[in-house]
Length: 326
Ligand SMILES: Cc1cc2nc3c(=O)[nH]c(=O)nc-3n(C[C@H](O)[C@H](O)[C@H](O)COP(=O)(O)O)c2cc1C
Image (cartoon, rainbow, N blue to C red; front, side):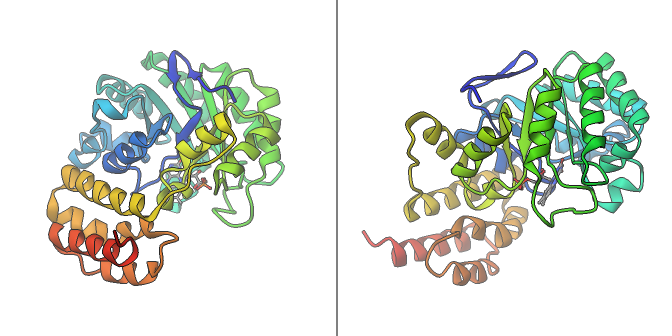
């Protein structure tokens, strides 16, 4: 894993990537993580059809700001024409990279042939990639699972299709579609795909600590690591990985840093959604940042009572005074 990595012509300062997380990696979350040193942020999955049919709600998911760039926008769909048309819209909106979702194992997505269903249908996947490649100039990536059985053969096949049809990187979360999130990610499949491809391979799945990230790189030779769930309670994980790579040590996250970040996350979410919606969102989300704090459970319970910005701010202040007396 080299400190600077390229996906097509897009250079990443660090080989660390925020995974697309539906309902989570909105602009506010991405801005928080980016400011903490993440190499590349990715939107949650966005429906190609939603964009093509001009749904306002879907278009709003493309909202971005300069400070989060480069930005990867993930699209899902099963219709090559709609995917190509949506890709052109995403490029025109200023995205730096487009990622194709070939890994989502949610029924609602798969019943239309999209997400992990594409791994059973490589011909359609190939058409989608080829049509999108012709429609845009910016780099294209795909994100996939192992496939439908543990052998990983479908993943190796799709990875080669991606490379031959002009994709610039492949991200792999090596669990089968049936596994969803159970069991463990099979990192040996990341190593296998890395050996088969010459474009960059991004490893994903079960990185819970900075040490895990370096472990994945050592075990698989992947060019970058992608982190999802661990970033919710530890958005500092990206900077910790860089520090571990560069200095061999990992800066700790103090309670004060957590309370400061809660305020930042609150402000960014209000900036994106307005106070009323943001406060509803914060009831479940502020507690992510309480991970490891004393009485984190009490904090999360109290966060359910957030109705206004001032409620959230007094909660943060109260817990800070209780646990970080100056
Ligand atoms: C709540 C949630 C939402 C997700 N949404 C997406 C998504 O929109 N697109 C996608 O490709 N993967 C999605 N994933 C899968 C993650 O990107 C990632 O592959 C998976 O969580 C494994 O990485 P991790 O162990 O670092 O979390 C989602 C996962 C979770 C838990």
